[in-house]
Amino acid sequence: MHAPLPPVRAIPVEPLMRAERLAKAFGGHAALADVSFSVRAGEVVAVLGPSGAGKTTLFRCLAGLAPPDAGSVRVWGQDIARTAGRDRRRLARDVAVVFQQFNLVGRLTALDNVLAGRLGHVPAWRGWSRRFGRADRLLALECLDRVGLLAKAEQRADTLSGGQQQRVAIARALAQRPRLIVADEPVASLDPATAAGVLDLLRDIARGPQGDDGAVGVVCSLHQVDLARAAADRIIGLAGGRVVADLPTSLFDAAAAARLYGNS
Ligand SMILES: Nc1ncnc2c1ncn2[C@@H]1O[C@H](COP(=O)(O)OP(=O)(O)OP(=O)(O)O)[C@@H](O)[C@H]1O
Ligand SMILES: [Mg+2]
Image (tube, rainbow, N blue to C red; front, side):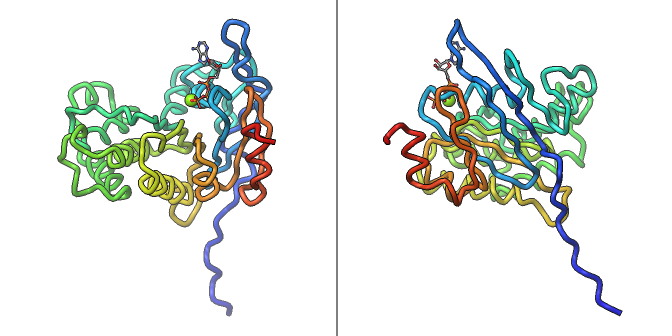
């Protein structure tokens, strides 16, 4: 008899998220044109590109905050701009958004901010009255622990440092139990060391616990090539609203960066 083999982490065949031929224009100016790429569970994808390249526009489409003029964003095969009712609510839970400016409620504690991540899971009246059950509170504490901030659970969010606030925002995203985390410049307001720490955290979250269930996909936009190289599995270069590079990080070299930022 052989000893049983250790469990192998399943590599999903279907992408978790697929953006297909996205286009969006503002007043005749194309902010996105023919943008296609995908993100798999367990993968960190960084989107790089000069200012005005269309990153925020793209992330708003990925998060379902703005509909594209053409094309689709599919999460588990479902078009997020064309779902309604219960499917729409499920997709809203599956996709968590992390913003550059954290978007916490300053006068609430870190824990209460994280509990807001549970709003899509509990009946509305519980959310309005902030009466979360024991299981939700435990989960929120677990998420704070995951980002290293359990000791700050009862501290008001507006008294936390920028790096701590972004980690609370990530804990809130985790409390949502998402499949995909969409983060537009999540570290732009942080100093370099804190930024690297937050990206390490996102990478660990993407890897998830062993077994497929915990793995999520992360797509984030960044301005620093070095940070993308350290944290991402794949780098997408966006320029003038178009995908000009889609490479494994190891192939995104200085020449690729120079081409993206127009230095060669
Ligand atoms: N609501 C809007 N109305 C008009 N034009 C817009 C709007 N949102 C974005 N744009 C334009 O679309 C283009 C892409 O903007 P976007 O904010 O997506 O760029 P970005 O890559 O996020 O830039 P940055 O790195 O500076 O954040 C820009 O030319 C911008 O002026
Ligand atoms: Mg932007």
